[in-house]
Length: 615
Image (cartoon, rainbow, N blue to C red; front, side, top):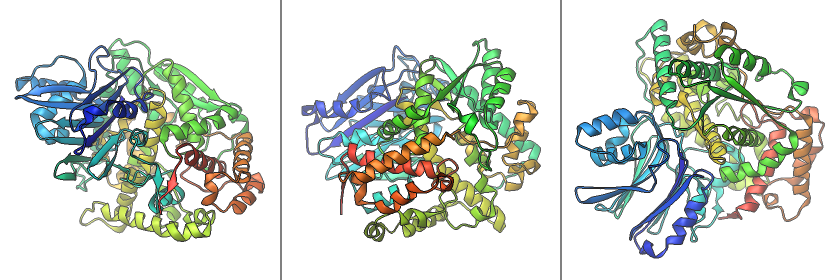
């Protein structure tokens, strides 16, 4: 895992500006703490920060190869899980290799198959290849968007980076935000509409897309998307197929030349990955698998059961560590460090994010990094298999908007009236929702309920899941930890997307088909444990701390957020009785405390990045 960046400019000789691409590259030193490299030609400059996973002694980037008298240069962030199959096929076609790393395999794949090479890749990736003969840059991002990639194109200059901060480091690029970006922050955030970079002139290369930039301009094409297909397998065959796919992808993702661990909550998703990984370790004599979990000081004391969080994780974690025979480490954080890390989480994302849900993950990853460089995580199973409560509640199914963010009118009420009139948050969300529904692949002959559940699956995979994948990538890479997400394997996602809802709900249980697929793999009580999300703090001190922070912001006339929000309304909200803070802000985990933390993060972001408003 790494950080990549680059600059193409037809109006300058970039060899005269080596420090610019060096500065852009250096912004991502946390993503790649092990090595750094830049490459310059007349019109293209590339930069790379490396986190060494496979063949640490080789594989330095930018990497170039000459073929047929022409030079191809690559920068790459990611991991290929079918490297050996690709390498054998390329060797059979006459290619030779100097390293054991997947970077070289990817570069040679591009040389051999051109832009179509991406159809052969199994992995998580964002990469760029400069073709010197064609004077063209090829950018590509993995199918589900696990690895990030942003770009900016203006007046003959093209910039890209794994994170916005790399683009913002270019001296001719300013941190600005327009009405659309403000709507993303205040109406959609911490989610982000696919393709939007929030900052004016910064865009995101969407998952499953590639981009070509040359002297004829820029063009973007889709190479993969979810498709609606008839599902021919019965319940038994479906469960077997899910099990086979999951086992294959986990075992592929355990390949590493550095220590690997799993994140274990004691829930269905992480327990399945941990058990498969531990079994693989035992079978291949790889030693004892290490597992990690996160919690908060005094959380058990303050825990209150809810529909979203029915029970604490710890007893289930203990059950699973004994069952799988792992070496487990509990990591706990207290309120002060959680609040302190809210700012650092903004710098990792380059945007306000999921408040303490981000901050705790950042702290968690920092501790894991002390013992491992690669972690396996259960992210995305709920989106793919239909595990969230909103898949099962009529009010959410019929809400006519994104079910994780039902109260845009409340959000709008916190804004200054003139800002609300300018960005029209409720209309903005309606438009984004309509766009998402228009993309849904349909299956002829499906009834209304099946069609609605297909819509919900599509919305969750393409609109909610990216928020969590962004979070996982930025918080982990901010401390140089690579996190792999087996449930995002495109073969698994494409197959499960087309499983009829009745089969997905086998046994009348959420994620029923996944539970059936794992029969005999997990203890029965874990197999049928009710879903419990990533833990958040229940300590009332956290609420008091973020309220105090917001009150400080409201009392400081220089606070940049004051130009956007109704300060008096938020002040009254902060003065209200704490029992009223079950405010639905975003998803399952962000309520009243996270609303205040989010506003504080917005102010931090505006200050630190010196964001100006483009009217």
